[in-house]
Picture 1 (cartoon, chains in turn green, orange):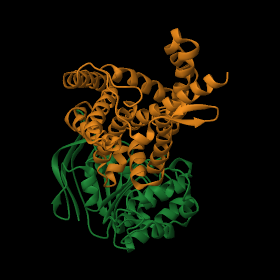
Picture 2 (tube, helix red, strand yellow):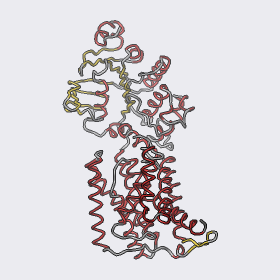
Picture 3 (cartoon, helix red, strand yellow):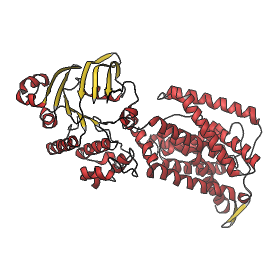
Picture 4 (cartoon, one colour):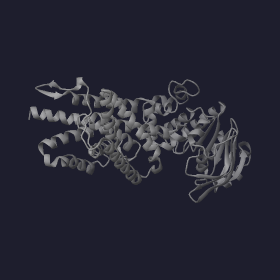
Length: 234
Length: 286
C-alpha cells in the first residue's frame, strides 16, 4: 500500500536519510524503531512532504501513485493521516472543534464525532475543553481521534506513547489493535521495543538514516538479541 | 460637563465604531495572518472613493458600501496572490512592499479623483439628527455605532461558532499540522485576507460619509488602526473593540480639552500600556 523506495532526505546540507526503503501492506502495523536522531521523524515528515526536510532522491508511492512533491493536504486527502510527534493539538480549538474542523458535523459517512467519542469516551467528557487544557493521555487520544476524522487508510503515528503513563500506553496498544482489526494500516514510530512488539506485524530499525534491520515480529520474539544490539537497550 | 461633554462622548463612541470596522480587518490580517499590511489605509481610501463613486451613480448608499467591499476585497486578492506571497514570513519585506503599494494606490486615486474632498452621500433616512436626551445627535453617526456593534457580533460568531472560524484559528495555531490533515490552508488564509481587505473597504465607504475623503486620509486611518490593534492586542477581536473605544474616546477628549496635544493623548497612553503589557490588553505571545 505504502512504498518508500530509496529516499534521500536533507535538512539543508545535512544528509539525514540515506536511501531508506520501507513498505506497509494493507491492514499491517509496521513498527519503526531506532534511537533518537536516527531519522524516524524525518521519514514520517518525508512521506507527508512536510518541509523541512527536502526529499532529493527516491520515490514514495501510495496505492501505486507517486506522492513525491505533492502538497501535504493532497497527500492527506488520498488517505494518509498523521499523529504528529508532540501531538501538535490546536490550543485555540475545543476537543469537538478538533474533529469538526476536519469534517463538518453534517457529514455522517465514515468516522464521525459520535464514533470518535465512542472509541474515546474520555474525550466526550472533555468536549468543550481547549487543546491545551488536556492531560497527556487525553491529548494523545485527541491526536488519534483527529487523525481518524479524515477516514484514512494509513495512519503515521510518531511516538504516540511518548510521555504517557504505563496504563495509558496499554490503552493505546489496545486502540491500535482495534484500528488494525478494522483494516487500517499503521506505521508506528516507537522508542519502546516492548510496546512496539505488542502491536506490530513487522519491525524496521533505522540507524544513522539507514535501514539496518527488518523482520517480522514473530522472528524478533524468537531472537531479540540481534534487535537489541541496534537499539542499545536492555 | 453636561450637554457638550455628552455630545463629545457620543462623538468618541461613534468614531470608535468606525475605527473598529477598519481595525477589525487590520487585526485579521496583522494579528491572525501575521502580515504587516501597511496598505490597509490605502485599501480604506480605495473603498471610500469606490463607495463614493458607486453611491453617487446609483443613488443608493448601501449599493456603494457593498461595491466598496467587493472592489477592495478583490484588490486584497490581487495584493495577496500577486505580491505578498513572494515575501511570506519576512516582516521587513512585507512592510516595505505594502508601504510601496500604499503610495502607488494613493497616487492612482489622486490621478482618478483629484485632490478635492468628497463626502459619500448618505441615504435620506439617515440624514438629520435624532433627539437623544436633552440634545440632538446626527442619525448617521448613530447608524455607524450600530453597524460597528453588529459587525462585532457577526465576526465573533464567524470566528468562534463556525467551521470556517475554527479553520482560521487552527491555521493560526499551527498551519503545518492543519495542512497535513488535508486542509488547503493557503486558501483559508487568502479568504481571511480578502475579508480583512473588504472590511477596510467597508470602513472607507462608511467613514467617507462623516470623515470625508481626501488624499492623505489613508495615512491617518492607518495610524489610528495601528494604535487600536496594538493597544487591544494583535489578533484579538475583543481587543480591537476595546482598543477602538479607547482610541475613539481619547481622540475626542483630546480634541476638546487639549487640542494641541490631541495625538499625545492617544499615543501617550498607548506607550504606557505597551510598557506594562507588551502584547496589548488582550494579546498573547505568538
